[in-house]
Image 1 (cartoon, rainbow, N blue to C red):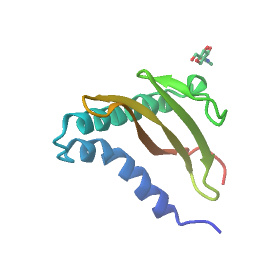
Image 2: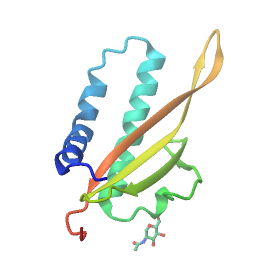
Image 3: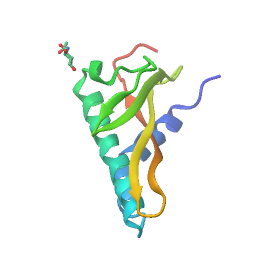
Length: 121
Ligand SMILES: *[C@@H]1O[C@H](CO)[C@@H](O)[C@H](O)[C@H]1NC(C)=O
C-alpha cells in the first residue's frame, strides 16, 4: 500500500509551520513554556542538521541517544515507500525542576518529512 503524494506533501508543510504553532500555543506556566521551547529548539537543531546533508552526529537508527541542547534524544528515519519523503522521528526527555515535585523528566518528540526529490521511485 502506498499513500498519496499529497499526503506526504501536507505532512512536510505541516512540519514547516509547526515552529509557529508551538510559539502560539499560549502556554502560561513557565515550566511548560520551557519544555515547549526546548522541544522547538531541539527540532530546529535536528532539522538544521538534516538539511546540512551530514547526519552522522544524529546517529539515526542506531538506538543510541545523542545529546542535543543537553537533552538525550533518540533519532531515527524510515523511507516512505512510493514517495519522495523520508520520515524522521525523534523522542527524548527534558529535565525540569519544580519546587514541590522536584526534578521531572518531560517527554518530548517530533517528526520531520525530508523531501528527497532525486531519489528513484
Ligand atoms: C560528518 O560530520 C561528522 C561529525 O559530526 C564528521 O566527523 C564527518 O567527517 C562528517 N562527514 C562529512 C562527509 O563531512
